[in-house]
Length: 222
Length: 114
Ligand SMILES: Nc1nc2c(ncn2[C@@H]2O[C@H](COP(=O)(O)OP(=O)(O)O)[C@@H](O)[C@H]2O)c(=O)[nH]1
Ligand SMILES: [Mg+2]
Ligand SMILES: [Zn+2]
Ligand SMILES: [Zn+2]
Image 1 (cartoon, each protein chain N blue to C red):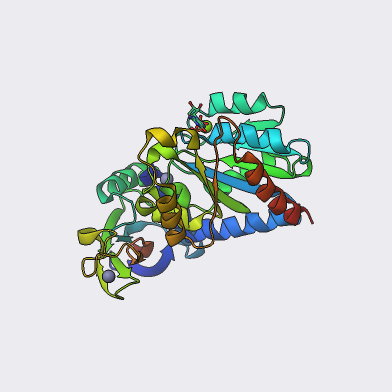
Image 2 (image 1 turned 90 degrees about the vertical axis):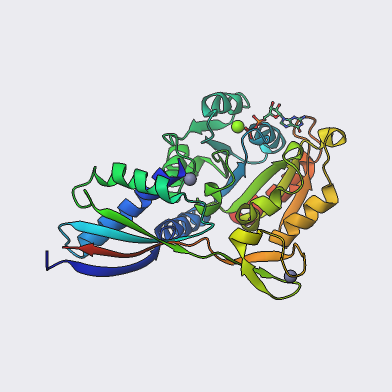
């Protein structure tokens, strides 16, 4: 095999996805649809928070939800019960979604019918941080039982998030959770992060979260 | 499984590259992997074998993995240290105000092909 050539590639694995994601972001802006990418560890409260968020905003915007988490069959039903359009993405057991899979989901939702699209990403803090979905904004949920030092363990996830929701604040008395330290660690990773403590169970803090979202969605729809 | 997902990504990229360069066969692929990229080399190799063998272009191609060291920078004492040995706490001054300078790379460096 003397005619074997060595071809320099020097390309990041994420590069083609990053480009694809930027393209999708542009298309969404064009069609005035706001896409939120919601991430967390399994069980931090994505579905519960989404249900609250939909209740708060469904009279104001046309909402569509894409479910990609493992329990998505159950989750998609929970969301469908709120009366908004919900679809299930087929991730084939994959631990993350990329821009291409997100685009397919968006197509299924139909941008003409949706102002506010939400992606419930796969429950994991590692790869969703590396694969840009093309979302307009990224949010993650950190729940109190996970501990206040989580931002130190998953720096990349915290650095790419526009908002961090600290959920399950109702159980703070039972955990050794230091809210101030937690905020400090998050800001260390990402000085621009907006931090909102919430309790998805009772609805505490959801207003502030919904206000933040409204501001972003309105800007996208302009 | 994360490794399989990234292997599909590599295969997509190389399929495009194969078309651009009118390649018949890729014999080996060299990957550069940062020490803290979160990818396990042995799992990556397994996933590669499984997925590459299902393509015409990359069947039996060897995956060569080069490791790139991870380095963390301390904002307080301005020193650099090995991430894998010391983690998030600066070994010189004990500060937590540190960030990763390099070590999460994941690059396709080169391929050998005909
Ligand atoms: N105590 C408490 N439990 C909550 C809260 N939010 C969610 N949960 C519970 O946490 C579990 C996981 O919630 P879920 O929304 O399914 O999490 P997901 O896997 O991230 O979608 C469920 O049993 C919820 O009832 C909260 O604010 N406080
Ligand atoms: Mg869920
Ligand atoms: Zn993954
Ligand atoms: Zn130091």
